[in-house]
Image 1: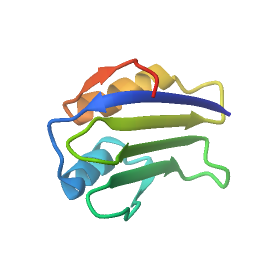
Image 2: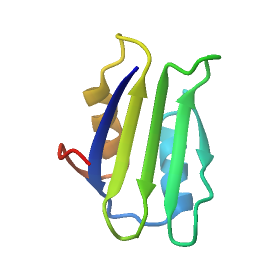
Image 3: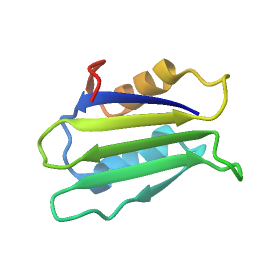
Image 4: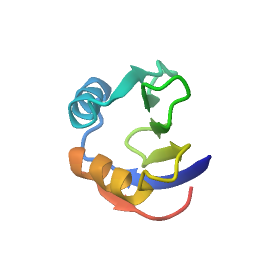
Length: 100
């Protein structure tokens, strides 16, 4: 499995709104709200295969701090940079390539 971690600064801090945006942008994934602690935002999506081939998670421990975007891939055909760009574009985010 390949794993990619990127920091994102998002203009939107409303978890339900972010979830709606991700569901609309990535209908091929099953999304869930991680129901984290007070103030923490955690959303995760994964492909529908029995062993998910693509997993995306978005975590912000202390809003409005940066979000941590993690992409995990089990196959060699999915482009992690393209997925990262799609997430950033969907959320109107500014993405940085800084490791977290």
